[in-house]
Structure formats: C-alpha cells, structure tokens
Image (tube, rainbow, N blue to C red; front, side, top):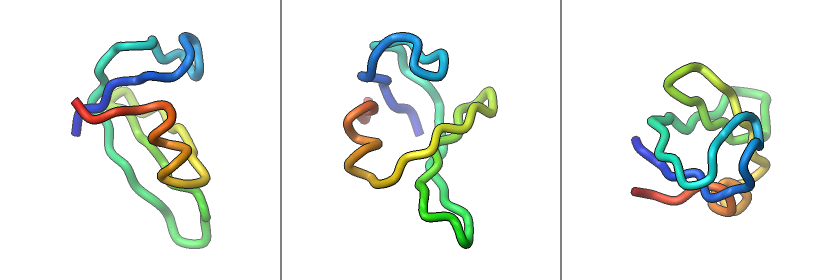
Length: 58
C-alpha cells in the first residue's frame, strides 16, 4: 500500500509529505503494529491511532 508521511521531518529519516510504499504487519508475542517500508525500515506503533497520527492513505 502507499501512505503519505504526515509526521515531523527526520523522524526515522522520513520526509513530511512524501509518499512511501509500505506494509503494515504484526508479530506473535509483540504488542506493536509494525510499518515496514519498501527499503526495509521498521517503524513500531503501539496502536493504529498512533500510526494514523503520522501516516495517511493516498
């Protein structure tokens, strides 16, 4: 899927307003939701609400 980063510039190297190809996943025994970018950056979020504060659907 493609999402636009709406968080602050520089957070994990992301650029505000840029669109990234990502996957959203989780792993057993891990409470986080993980956003995985095409270039394999991992970004953990404690909830979908937290993820939606930094990303929006394109």
